[in-house]
Image 1: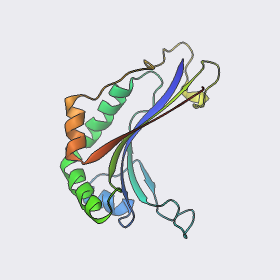
Image 2 (image 1 turned 180 degrees about the horizontal axis):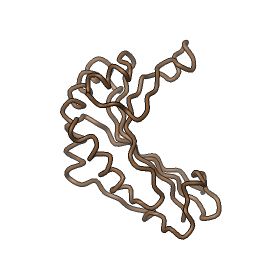
Image 3 (image 1 turned 30 degrees about the horizontal axis):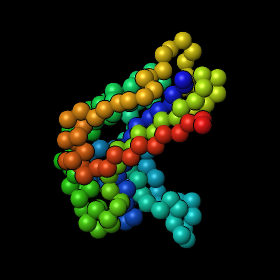
Length: 154
């Protein structure tokens, strides 16, 4: 089974830009989304997003991808948590998220990016992964939710 997967951590806000979040956190994001950059009324995207990406790999298990991402973010955990708490008070539901996205497909065809698949390199274990105590503490500290999206051929 071919698996394409990625993880990222994001902070979302209707009122605070990703640039302002970066200044307040002291860390430049890997990606930003600007509220209303595609359409003003109603605004699309609906929120500003400050995003840090984990490694993109066809052979790394999800738990390892998350660990690498948390390694990058852990020094900023307290600042992320304080900002997430502020955002949540002002805009319930627009806070922090650890996102896991996985695409399952045949070795021949998949919804995943074909360039990410390396023939002869084993795919990550397709089923099962875990969050260790360090990751759970980080999620608690940063007030983050875990969101897992999985797609596949059925």
